[in-house]
Amino acid sequence: MLLGVNIDHIAVLREARLVNDPDPLDALGIVKRAGADQITIHLREDRRHINDTDTQNIINLSHLPVNLECSIDPAIIEIVIANKPARATIVPEKREEVTTEGGLDLKKHFDTLQETVKRLRDAGIEVSLFIDPTTEAVELSERLGVEWIELHTGHYSNLYQMLHSNLSRTPHSVAKLEVSKAQLESMLFAESEKLQYSAQFAKSLSLKVAAGHGLNYQNVKNILKIKQIEELNIGQSIIARSVFTGLEEAVREMKELVR
Ligand code: PXP
Image 1: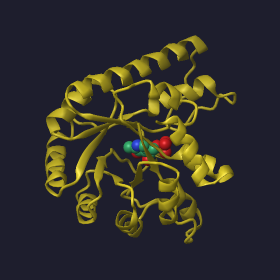
Image 2: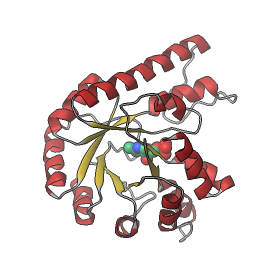
Image 3: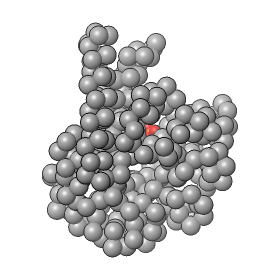
Image 4: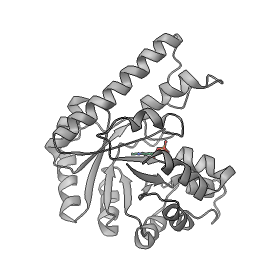
């Protein structure tokens, strides 16, 4: 399985002080040396971490393919086309969110998406859609003519954390749930089944399947059992571990799991 490392969080640390360090550009060689297969970045409309200069430099200098996450905002799409990453992953974006909280609403944005996908593909950029693991979303993705889908594992990861965390912390974007351990277990099982079924269904429609959001060194193990998933994009847990181990070791440890 391929591993894309999302390096946005390096820029989050930099932006906390509005200084130049740490520079996500310095991660490129390290991530490649550690055995990862792709660099993933998100150019958000509010530029809260990765900015236009990062985007340009990372795409120009990376020896690994760059997967650029973006919204359907026309100004952002212009930048994507000008920079020509290997892949553009279209994600929903809300300014007030802490991180990307759900998959794209493909029905609502179908016409805009169709036009955007065409523009990106005409520019020679592979397109992926970040979607919730539902039959409808997979079907609509196929109709939109993309090469890839990325299944949102955020709900799975949140349930996993609630079930396994000793601190019983409720992750961001999750309403406090008053449920028993048994209920959480069955919700986690149901979400894993949805991911499994959606991956299988997408593969049967000849879509390539990636997955990501909230994955870490523990919860990734169930996801690895879904053989139709070809690639995982992981950021926060790798960058968090790198604070203690260094980035190369943190990526290497993840790549040892994701193979
Ligand atoms: N995939 C997509 C589409 C994302 O938006 C993100 C978060 O930027 C990730 C993967 C990585 O998520 P995390 O940082 O939680 O591993």
